[in-house]
Amino acid sequence: MTWLVGTIGIWLAAWALNARLAASGWARTTAGKLAVPILFGVTILVLWEGLVRGAGIAPVILPAPSAIAAKIAVSLPTLWLDFSQTFLKGALPGFVIGCGAAIATAIAIDRSPFLQRGLLPIGNFVAALPIVGLAPILVMWFGFDWQSKAAVVVVMVFFPVLVNMVAGLQASERMQADLMATWGASYWQSLVKLRLPAAMPFLFNGLKIASTLALIGAIVAEFFGSPIYGMGFRISTEVGRLGLDMVWAEIAVAALAGSAFYGLIALIERWVTFWHPSQRH
Amino acid sequence: MNASANATAPVIEAKGLNLVFQTADGPVHALKDVDLTINRGDFVSFIGPSGCGKTTFLRCIAALEHPTGGTLTVNGMTPDEARLRRAYGYVFQAAGLYPWRTIAGNIRLPLEIMGFSKAEMESRIDRVLELVELKGFGKKFPWQLSGGMQQRASIARALAFDADILLMDEPFGALDEIVRDRLNEEVLKLWARTGKTIGFVTHSIPEAVYLSTKIVVMSPRPGRITDVIDSPLPKERPLDIRDSREFIEIAHRVREGLRAGHQDD
Image (cartoon, rainbow over all chains, first blue to last red; front, side):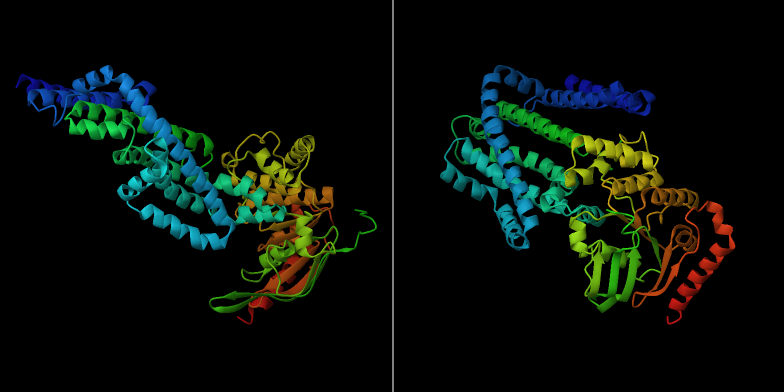
């Protein structure tokens, strides 16, 4: 009972403190901008810890953050092995290949009205296939190791990037295209110097969506056959052994990796499309 | 480019030019039987209400539209050949600068496409920036500049590769009166300094009379030329020439021409 009361007390106190901080001028400084969300995050963790302990919740239902942290601390080599298998070998190459193929296909579609009529519907069709049906087939084709996981990721990221890139290539203004014509620019000159830069805000929308899909795809694909390591493999086997603290540890790693990957792409976006009204400050 | 020998050679020649757009509501006669000769060094204004085909005619010269009848030559070539030989610079109604390039980068763009050497590019950029009085703004991005400055930058871009013909489609239409006056003066100075042939679309009578050696009055439905006025005004034109009798007489004739075109509405 003391745990529960204490936790709720800390929660209310932190809430009140944060509300005052956010309302004060200090919240607009760099330190303030960091402190407010950090305090919020810490409050959530304390609340979680206190409720789990105070209400005596079974670790199988919900382990306390401290238990998850302890598990992470003792399992670092395993977590790193899983992370490198699933993220570095499965998600990342799949993301690069899938996005690269989508960009190349978008340019081909843009160049040829024939492909425009043919390829977009096929891309759409592939994107509509259920991933739980596709993953086992790709595991059969490409084997248990990371290659099949990368293949699943390729299929998942291809379509959102393709659709955005095709739209992006049509985004340059009529007048800007006319200017290229008046200078006697070739197709490739106008592609490189006008249409690709104009497509960047669209492309990065696609890449950001694809970054989250890539990790999901790589993890889910491991459910259908993998070597005896990998984040998806670990989650599915630890659930069977009721090792929920390990499942949560993998989830924590996945959340961190996914956020960092998304953040990295958003950072590159800010650098590449600095000229776009949404990025100007 | 023997300027003295070609002093009166036609640069742009249209004979019986027709352009019919096929639209969902049936054919639209954008240009009907347009005959016009523009000589080297002329400053020609096209004036008329919207839909009279003035912009369309300019776009035909630039090979951005293709006539459906008659002949049109630019420097003795078809417009498409002339376009590929970079015969003209085109300034649109909006500046149309690429936002991911600096002002200097925008001016460098046509030069990159045409394959100028690096040193040549830099010296040309410096020269045209000075010409449009934007020296020191080369490193700025377009969205950091006012509308008038952006439009001057777009003129600099059209001048950078030194084509003999400059086509301008209502370049100052979106700017306020004061900025417009100043830019008109600058365009005249530029024309006097460079001796280019200029085609200028406008719907302002004073602007047309102030700038031009030849005023082409057009009217809509179908788009056609109703009057061509050779201006008797001297080449040197201070802004207050607009209060002179000759100026007012020409402006009156232009207005009559525009009114005549409206009578059949």
